[in-house]
Amino acid sequence: MKAAVLQNGFGLENVAVVDRPEPAPEAGQVLVRLRAASLNYRDLLIAKGLYNPKLAMPRILGSDGAGAVVAVGPNVTRWKVGDRVAGCFMPLWHDGPITDAVTKSTLGSERDGTFAEYLAIEETALVRIPDHLSFEEAATLPCAAVTAWHALTEAPTGPGTTVLLQGTGGVSIFALQFAKALGAQVLITSSSDQKLARALQLGADAGTNYKTNPDWDKWARQQTSGNGVDVVVEVGGAGTLERSLKAVRTGGHVALIGILAGAGNFNPMLVLMKAVRLQGVFVGSRVMFEAMNRKIAEKQLRPVIDRAFPLAEAPAAFRHLESGSHFGKVVLTM
Image 1 (cartoon, helix red, strand yellow):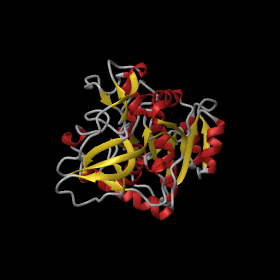
Image 2 (cartoon, helix red, strand yellow):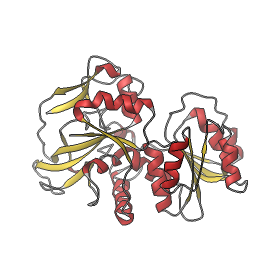
Image 3 (cartoon, helix red, strand yellow):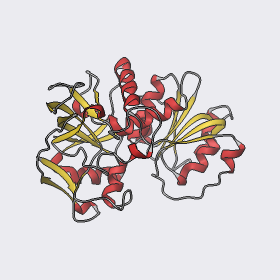
């Protein structure tokens, strides 16, 4: 089978599409013929050596994929040949709180991932994909969508709440769609007026360009009559966290997800004085994934795909993601 593999060291120059043996399902596993996969910022960090410096190589990259079951191993009861499925980011996290053990099972880092034509995986690490979604759309769900869903439902988000989103990457666009589906008002920032216009078309209630309006925390408070937003989906990290804490209301919720803005100074005084709940969100469990898919099916939501590349052009897909020009998700097709 063909697979996008990181080999011979870190760096995008070491990502190559090569031939690898097709896996066979063991007891309790199924074999999935992957039809699509999607890239996350995490994959870029892994390839560059900024995520897991002890990564064992060669490693098939990718955590997100969707396809059809083509074979089942002994003792499999949950799936049959032909079922349309997507894999979980952490195959061992089924339900309940996150643990050290489940974090050591992530695809594309601790074990071979989804940027390949076939994947052998535990039957309990799969979810059925909504019938109305294509394989390409379903492949965008396991990491970015589940992360956004976890962040918003933990907050919680619903009618009468206001959510502030940063940028228009995969997590933020999913958070926009889910927040609106849950009945919330949505504010969003971007460095591109064109991307802001697209976000407004998707349902965002207001947006601002953080390049021309660097005081976006003040803007967010103005949009909420000076009170501050109820929830911030923080994808920037230390570089934007202080402004997020200024933008959120007293007693509000900040879901810390990403590190896109890089390093920065962080004073925890705002967390204390405003009694903010600051929660780290590391994707989510299979049960969360299943609940999210029920909402996607109920609302007939469709993931936003920026661009699809064939698997053979995986290095080009990485460079497109690195450019930051995307709106929504970048996909590989097999």
